[in-house]
Length: 498
Ligand code: ADP
Image (cartoon, rainbow, N blue to C red; front, top):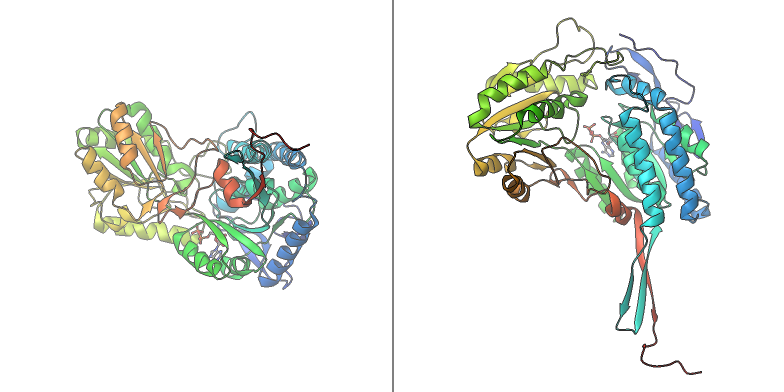
């Protein structure tokens, strides 16, 4: 496996007040390459002292006003330059990401890697939104004029997972920074490498020091002090429901605002009239992309009985295009899982699947890949929708496939879930698609398509899949302080006294 890369000295360090630094304690932890299980490098292990330094820098930058009170056009210029630099350094960033979390490089792309193009888009989108969306004005009966202001709110804690390190981080940073806030970012301990390039990019793009800071480390050691810090006004978090509950409890002590984007067990509902030529490869992509480590993965595939057998045959064929292999090799589609813990979790569910149902294909470590956290693309069938493998988020390349009779049956199975993140509907009938969209209890629904984004979409979930939405104007609401100023008007009918 090709796992070695020249690592610059900034990689694996915190970025605080414009400097790459080690932990104040001097402690480190190992970054493991999930494809080889070898140690890549040692990473700064942040704790409350590092968080305190980062929050102090962020607060000072915010109070100074060089960014928080800058003209929106200045912030747009800096963020656009950062977006250009992300694209220019795309190859380097994607390799670091593969090294830290195992997502495959994919084929050769003519331009920037799609993940980095999307990250750049995050910055450009919010750079423009903050400059152009504007505020509101209300005129009450020609006697009172009110206008609203969306002001930078302060220092935010951004806590992100490992499954899309740069894309998911920029999804939070972009609005946070665009509206003039300062940020202390705590990336996942499982993706501590690629973020250094983004820090360099912000500096080169002209973002004043202290506005953006990163503290590396574990959730318990660096995440908790960030959430609890009295100078942090809000926390935007993507991760597991258990962590969200912990954050919510701590954040409530100082009435911090929170935004949670959590897990899912999303249903991919395939009706008998669906165009299977499109639905089958999309279903495979929906659960095998990123080894199934995607919050919106279509992990419960519901198939109408009339086409069930046909679907299973076609799906197995489609899955054979997802052979596990070295993620650094161009063309590999399925990389390893992110960590030993994740490997044990997923293989634990595969053991359970053998008692709760039947493994149609896959279900084990691939032959010839003795090292690394690899699992074959897997389908579980003959299983009750209430079984644990159908209810719990596995976060691996593991689909459960469940037959259904009719629309109401499909909805009953789909909605029997503690989660409510995404839903996918495949049908040629518009009325079926609209009816199911209305009734499906999820925050996001895609019809006859995979996971396709418009950054104005209100991204987020219902039930245990999240609280709040991010995207477009909803991110503006979360990351700004909305205020108003009112003043009396002179009625149009009465001339002013001269
Ligand atoms: P996942 O299972 O996807 O890794 P987690 O919720 O465990 O999800 O982690 C997501 C992010 O939250 C990571 O950056 C992690 O370090 C951080 N984290 C974990 N526990 C806490 C906590 N108690 N408080 C704050 N952050 C945490």
